[in-house]
Image (cartoon, rainbow, N blue to C red; front, side, top):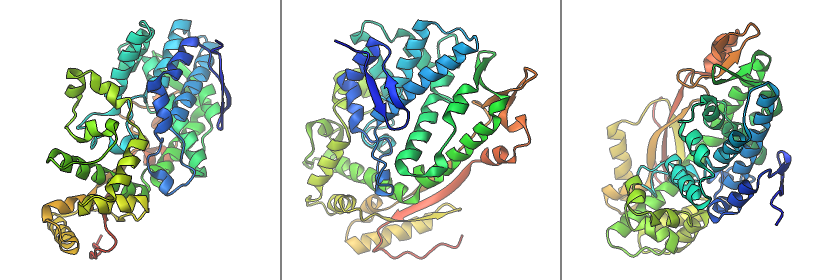
Length: 414
């Protein structure tokens, strides 16, 4: 069988699969599941074109990794064929642990289990299945491989993951502010002191990348309507789960019921290896199937949330520079309790509040470093007189409150 296949990608054109083992892993049911998980959760409620999947993104990120390897090799950075394959496999599988709707249900369907932990478990299982082919990839993923810049290509402030999702999300949402000069950035990659750096000629391309990232956060990832839809989805799952744990029969697919009927932690996956196989069958369709059933539930809250999501009747959302005070939270609970005739304790499912942060660039820890013409390496914020970079480095916080539109609340004084 010919395994040197070609994908026709809307962003990059033809992507060549250069290794038979890469083809085998792409064909594996665990990886194929990513076709059924949308990259941006419910963002298509705002941008109808945002229907691309984790599968698209993983293939695209692998393509960029291949280009990055070619660039570094052209600059006499020695990367063996074994290392190149490991890098491609690591970036291909970096998101394989994502659950339905990507980040949205990471801490509601599961209890404190992030997708990176599950990606690692999936990679270990695939490594066993394919006779140790992921040994080196696992080291790179965990950042235990001796060549530290390998992990930076997979996970850092300027990795192939971020480069692909910014370009891809901008394309599918139609938000042109997210467009970045990918070819230029990758061509400027280099290595100094076992760390990824950008040659000084690429300075302004990185400034544009960071500015695009900041704008994409406000316009897409933290769009207030997207935040509202995501919080409603999370509350729907939490309500279904709480009802199920209290003994009520909650109709769902076999894949979903296992995670609705019990509290699942990271330790659960370690104690019950079969749970990972169950998770590998779980995708967006299970959640929508559940919601379509739950709209007919005799539980008012679960029914209300499900109907609202299916008909896109989303909570009103307001953003503020100040957090909610405790007395305001109590007033909201009382208003919702009275409006819907429910217990005040149950009103928590019909509103959400919290904080969103926009962190386009954080210089401390994983900085983006510039290789100057004289051979010195400096943080991008110090590389030139770039006031934009210094401004982008500041973390911007907004406090949100989501609640039903038919509940009247006095607007806060900001």
